[in-house]
Image 1: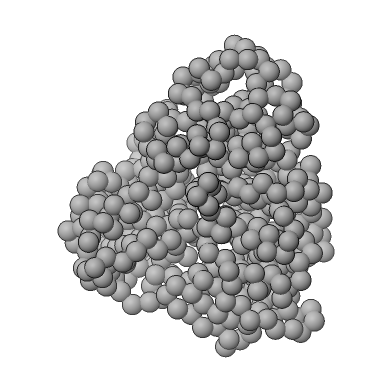
Image 2 (image 1 turned 90 degrees about the horizontal axis):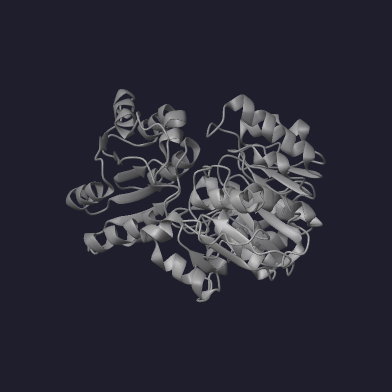
Length: 476
């Protein structure tokens, strides 16, 4: 292929083609390029398979030309192909790009180049909470009149409009760029943030030793580091941070914290007093999201925004208007029979634990439906996931699994969800495996009772939200 183009040069100089344009990491980048005047087209396997048609209809309304994933959209050597590093060389777009000499960038290549070209790049890192904190940060900066560009992996409800129903990106000033950054593929090493935020360090796609190295290097590369003092692994890395600013709900050493005894929690919202120990001031926070993990996320966003120049009281006030993200403890509704359905992105041990703890902090049985987001991740973290479900849920609660997400490819499928059910049982929990998602839905409708909360959990599959809504309708 040709030498890679500089994505920060004139974005309109070459046409862009996104393979997997509907993906959570691709769609916002495509929106940012198009918002800056570039010609952008794409293809997606989900588009060909008729999944989430409303998403692709919205992309077409916004002016994106969509092609079948058969290589037909790659026609000119001046195009640039953007494809995930996980996209195999046999995919028709990649084959055609090689034939024509079309340069290929990964999602991370493009995002890191745009991020590093900004005068102020604010990066959110960690194994859990990145999208929520990115959304909070983006909203705080927007509320403060800073006009940020925001690159997120989830739909931010504050920025949703009739024209932009899937607002996972906001196109603002090129010199203020807020983005979550990914450790799972190692691409976090490509970023040089003005402000680097580290939320937590826990097992996900890589070993703990690899994660410690990646996150430590990330803090060293950041002009200023913001670190969660409550997370033991993250706090150990604070020595790598430049001009560190720490936050924590429980760690009294943190510069930004919560006044003891001030927290009032409810099933859908919470309030507390934020304590800035640097000048010994207190600021009332209202957060329309439940769960201690979201209180920690709020402190991370306040600290990150402050490191980027927003006064703490302004950041705290902005969060009172934060509406949350799609699929992040997203309450779909409650049926007439009193069963509540929650749509949630929880897919690794830490994310799942945060969701389950939030649910168990209030009365009612929990039926936790979990769709693993791939055979590879299930093999990597299956034992820890099983331990999480067994530990966090009680004797009346049930974990229900279907087969992992599989949209094609050569991945090893020898170990599936049945293994996780066996491990949950060994840890003393109750679990059930029904191979198909449809079968799981039938079981939930037949077995849910008044007062139950059904959590629909999983990643890499936008149709989970459709499943959750259909389930609520059936429970009616």
